[in-house]
Length: 566
Image 1: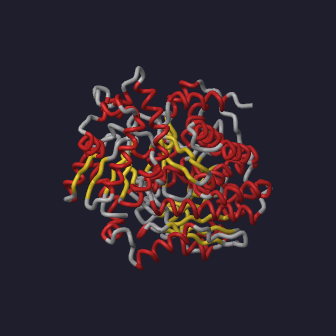
Image 2: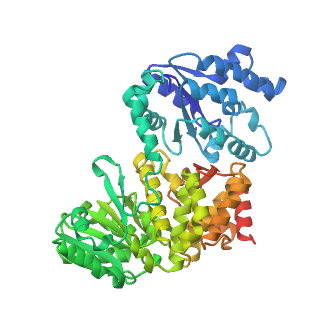
Image 3: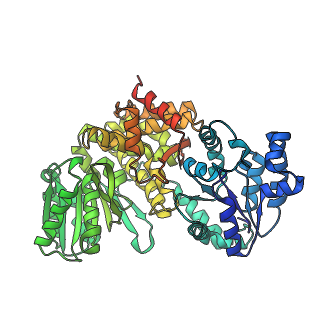
C-alpha cells in the first residue's frame, strides 16, 4: 500500500463525489483522471471519443494514469474503463490503495440518464450497454481492488467512513510506503500458515478455534464426544442446561447427552420439537421461550442445540433473544451442521416468503461435533451435507476440491478418516472466513453463500422441506457455476467438474421448473441483495469466489438451461 488512494468503478458510481470528500477528510489532493485528460488535450472526453475514437482515448488514459499514480499524496478518481488496460491495473495495484465503488446497474442508470457527456451510453439501449460494461469490467475491478464498498443506499459521508474504517488496519503499511515492519511481516506469515490446512487425514480428535477476540470459541471434532463428560464439563458452562432437540434425534442421542451433562454436575431440561425444515418457524421459537419461562430460566442458563441445522439455527436465535442473550452450545448431529451451520454464529428462523430472513449474528460458546452421530444419518442427509463440503473447496481451496473429487466414493461410503478430514477442513475454512468478516461487513463472508441464492429460491418455491437444504444448495452451485461460465468468468472444464462432483455426491443437478419469472421473484427476497438487485456469488476460477449482480438476460439463460438440463 502506498499513501495514495485510487477509486475505481463504473461511470456514475460516485468516484468523483466520494473522492473529493475523502481527499478533504485526509488532507490530500483530489484528481479526476478524465478531467486531467481534458486539461491535457484541451478537448472534452465526448469530443475525443467522437473524433479520435475509443482506442485513442485509452492510449491517452494510460499515459495519464501512469503519470498521476507516480505522484504522492493524492486521491485519484479513475475513468470507468481505466481498469481494462493491464498497464493501468499494474500502476494502480503497485502505487496505492485501490477502492472499488461497486454500484448496481439500476443506480448507475438513474445517476447518468440525463448526462450527455457519457459517450458509451449514447445508444438506443443504455441498459443493455451498461450491463455489458458491468459484465466486462467487474472481474477487473475485483482483481485490482484492495477494498470494495457497495454504494447501495449509503450517503457520501457513510461511504467515506466505510473506506476509512477498512483502511484502519492498513495504516501502518501506508505510512511505511508499503513495507510492513518485522512484526507485521510475522503476522502476515502466521496468517498465511493459518490458511494452510492444519487438519490431516491422520487426525482423529481435531481441535480448532474461531478467533473472534473475547468471543472466540473452540470447535471439537472427533468420535464419541457426546459421551465424554470431562470435555462436556469443560465446554458447557452453567449449572442449568436446556437441551433443544427434535423427534428424530431425541431417541438416538438425548439420553446419552443428558447422562454426560448430569455426570458433569448439570441440571438438564429437555425440549423436543417436531422434525423438519418447515418447523424452523415462529411457533417453534415460541415453544422454546414458553419452556424457558415456565422453568424460570435466567441469564446463567445455557441452551444446547442437539441436532441438525434447523435445531442449531433456531436454538441460537432463541439464545440471542431470550433475556437479550444467554449462552448456547452447538452439538451438531448431521454432516451439514457439522461442516457449516454450527460454525459462525448465523442464527434464525424462516418466514413463508423467505429462508432465514429473521435472525441474528450470535456466536456459540463451543461447537462439539461427534463424528459417530453420522453413523445413524440417512443417506439422503449425508448427501445434503456433502453439498457444503463441496462448497468450501469450490470457493476457497481448489486443492481441497480436488481431494473431494478423488475421495468422494470413500466419503459417500462413510469412511471415518475421510469424513473426519472433510469436517475438519471445512470447519477450518469457515472459521478463517468468520474471523475476517464475522458480520459480512466486507463482503468476504458472503462468498460462503455460493449456490444459496438459487438454493433458497428452490426451497421457498417448492415449499420448505420438499427438498433438503443441502440438495437445494447442491443444485444451486451447479446453476451458479453455469452462470459464472456464461459471464465469461469460469472455464467450461471447471463448470463441468462442479456438476460432476455434485452428481457424484448424490445431489440433484437439474433445477425444478418454477417458471423463470417466479424464480426471479423468489431470488429478490434474499438478505444479500442491495439496491433492489439480486446479488450472486460467482466463481472466477475454482477457489476464487466473489459477489456480484448479473445481467437479467444472462440470468434467464441460466435458469432455462438448468431447468431443461438432461
